[in-house]
Length: 296
Image 1: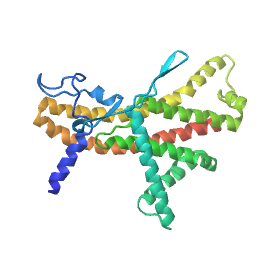
Image 2: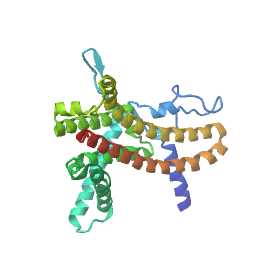
Image 3: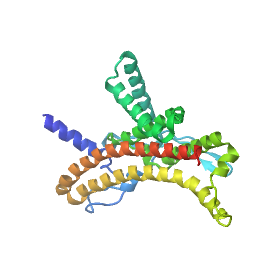
Image 4: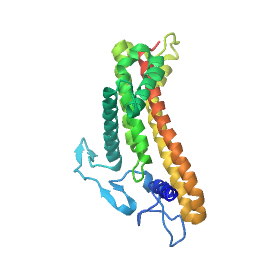
């Protein structure tokens, strides 16, 4: 009985990434009269959440507005829905952890787990790179880490998806880090001091115009690297899993023998990737902000 349940949940875990397909909006992967699987359709954003054989949850449609000739659509999409859901889960977990640590002199359970992560970010990321001065920004870095972690992990739950697979979401996160970097740099060095410090001292005069252009471009390559790294790594995991699932349509039972164990392995690997990408994004944010504050 236990083995049967384990197999059932393993298969459910895999199918949550999108075995079911939509008629008229998918590409053939099997015989002419076989099933269909459109990998791109499963990765891109939609105005609904697909629960496959349980049906679809249509998300609210809001009227768009036009500002300066640009049409802006405020309708709720799957990525926004998943962001809100992961944020609510995060708030619930942190409130629970705070309550547990308040009742117990020695942290235990979920409180101990969260405190361990907080201590790690403080002692292994923020303080070594920014010193004690970085502790005032610790809440910001913790918010970044926990939000990205939960946004990455929520997609491992069957039928749900990572909002970090959406380029707009990772761009928003990168812009937050970019804005904080500029604000902290100007606050520490002054507006003109920060701008003057972007170009290293002692540069020959004939090289100065080139260095100004290079340093200006460098301001934007840092957040671009942040958003692309997070987006590409999270999206790649989903594409690999969906590609493995496609073997079922091509090879039938032989494909299932290959797809299920490898799909489970990739899912387990995605847990590590979710942690790693949250860590990398936070670490690079700390480094970029520290570089802006201490330019010499």
